[in-house]
Length: 146
Image (cartoon, rainbow, N blue to C red):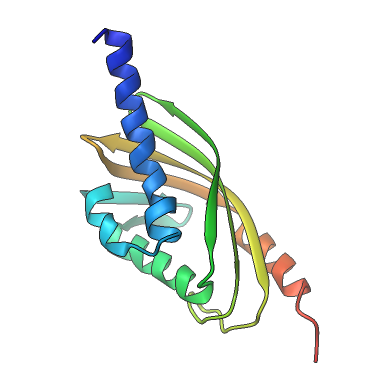
C-alpha cells in the first residue's frame, strides 16, 4: 500500500468512527456503542467549559428523551489527518421530557457542526457548535395555543 493510500485509509476509518455518533447513538439509540467510539479520557470542549464522556452521554440521552424521534443527518464531512468535521442536521418532535423540556409537541430542526480528534480509532476530543436557542425559538412558534 502506498503512503497516500495508507493515509486515505486512515482518514476513511476516522470518518467512519465519527459518523457512528449520529448513526448508532443518536439515530439507533445504541448507547453501548459509546465504548467502541470514545477513548478513555474523552473531552468535549464546550462553549462554557470542558465535559467528560459521562456528562456528554447524559446530555445525549436527555436530547433523545425529549425528542424520541430525533434523527440526525450527516450533510457534509471533511477529514484531514486525525481531525474529522461533520456538518449535520438534527430533526425531531418534542414528545418526551429531557434537558429541561416538557413535552410540547414542537418540531425542532437544528443544524450544527462538530469536529473530533481521532487517535487509535477512537474519539479523544470534540468541539461542536449549534444554535440551540434559535432552533428552540423556531420550534416554539409552531405550537398552536389551545
